[in-house]
Image (tube, rainbow, N blue to C red; front, side):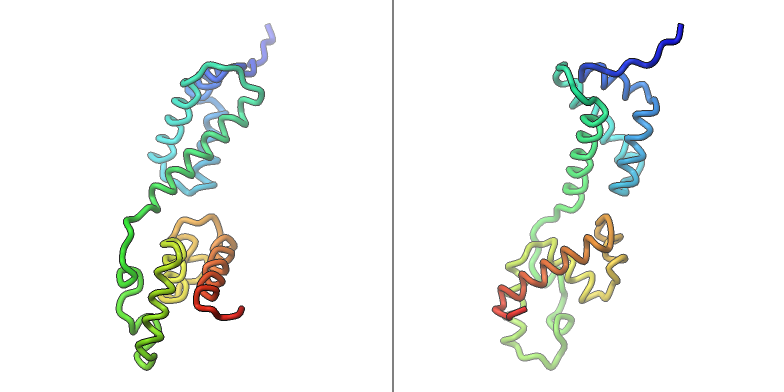
Length: 173
């Protein structure tokens, strides 16, 4: 008998196919590992979350692989967000002493204005600005350190952050 593997029709069948550790699971693990640069235990946790999500409701699916990859993608994003969430720290914790921000010959009122402006941007913007401008890392190093997909993403986000700071400071671009 020449039986081809049957395409799963329900979420439960799809979960069983993924749990069997076949080629679909291998492709999903490779996708999550390469796309999000996660460790093996984190990838395994994401795969378990995908299985749980699929088993919650046994309903029909139109495109089973697309659904499985989409759930894996969303779970990986949640893991990354959870990893990057930090408690709100004062600006001094992000940038250190005032001399590191602008130098010793900068007037104190300008430093106060800069600190107030930095307090108005998001913590992610402050991390990008600190990594690239204060610590002197390249875009690629910043992307690797802060777990962004590429240097292009860092450049785009950094550009937005600087524009936001200019708007807050009232400086025309």
